[in-house]
Length: 390
Length: 160
Image (cartoon, rainbow over the protein chains, first blue to last red):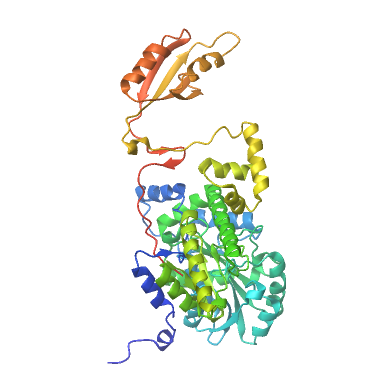
């Protein structure tokens, strides 16, 4: 028999961390700080609207790019939040989560050999998506000393004549780092100078704790070279509904819709109806969740200072990314021992790229009570490690 | 800052100051002063505990009583409200718009106690025209907290 598999797919390295994940997910008594989704249920108004749409028998396909009403609300929302204006008719596609947006944006824009700049540590799907789209991923390792922000120098050093796309994943999973207006300004300049395009993954935009989230699309001349990816999973606590969107210049969105149309058809209809309610009426619930995350974030930073665990102060998403290099272990060793000895699951920084070595990702999508218990165990664990080192 | 403190205390009055200061990114002394001031201004009127008496096995009856009254000269509803709210078994008294005037919540140990209160104390008041008593059969949610058991979280332990 012939080899049934495509070389391109087989050659994508399976996430090295999958084994670790499998071990954790089997360990039922472990407490976890490893989850990348909100602990809040979807606001009831949104769920109720989803139920209602089913009752009304809204169980058919929608148009490929999404419900007209939803696309209008998305554009209104983006305008409220960022001052960028998109045309709901031609510059939005409603996708199956933000993940699909990333995938189809790359597939629509990459020719074989085009290079995609991917700052890391970052979400796990950018690199494989670039490869599957025929592109060449080029990793930019971000640094702790810059609080894991992307700098002009790092960007310029990675650009070659083949560079086409910069992925901009902020607020960042796993570091919690954000890019402020001042941070983005030089990046925007370089992007224009070198005629690049940006896939700006802003899925955590609602979870910014230091002023309002800023999109790179707000800078002059950047709107026409940016695909803005966002969705409902994080800010609206709607992970399982699988609903996101991509906005950008009509020329690119049109091609993305083509791929979406053939691969997906349309995003789930009842999720789309539910999301309309979310955008129209759920900002108070979203704000409430943000405030709860922010309190937990402050609590964790305070505890880290108290127990002497090094960590820059992150202002986005729901992650902190402490430095565990002082214990002389790899991130994975640290996470494995912490799990075995204290039965607490955290994610090794290396799950998000080699530059995550020496760090662990701690999620604060947990109640304060859970965090207190877990932090108590973390304190005990690192005290023991320090003891052993002496 | 007041709003943040109150929003927190409304849901959890048990919090310690040090922790509250951390959560709100403020300092302890300032929060303590602010709370003391709000107690003085009667913005904070007390610190209570939400108890599901049902689970203690203790007998308890909660009644909602609608009351129609005649407002009194110069004093409107306030005087008659006072005569009602001074009873310790009366848990709350609200002046209500609509088909009746007061809504009273009453806590007692037995139905008989409630009926004795209504027929012995409340109905005989001169200003009271009529009453209608409703007994609470089950509390699903109280003070913003859902009292019926919630299912376990179905989140996976680790996701990227």
